[in-house]
Length: 134
Image (cartoon, rainbow, N blue to C red):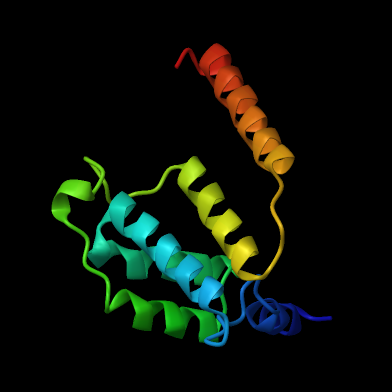
């Protein structure tokens, strides 16, 4: 395949979350909880940028993006609940978003899996502290 074909296929490959079902109340509640989490981390006005970033990564598709932006219009977060110095997400925030995405896809996330992620993050942080003196 040539470079143009590869580029087209990469742009149009399925995302992790293609759509959000209106038929399942649990899924809708989970979507709102994820948006609330993002709003508290970066502020409501920055959430579309975060969603666009996830779209570009291939984590969410067109339909899911449209529904999340529609849901976002109905969310108001008190400024006192927004994390100080917000505007950017850290690695843990992105991992939490990925877990929300997987749950929205109906996948079960076990506590062992979450513990393993936390353990890996601690290893990475400890390695960075030792290597970079952070």
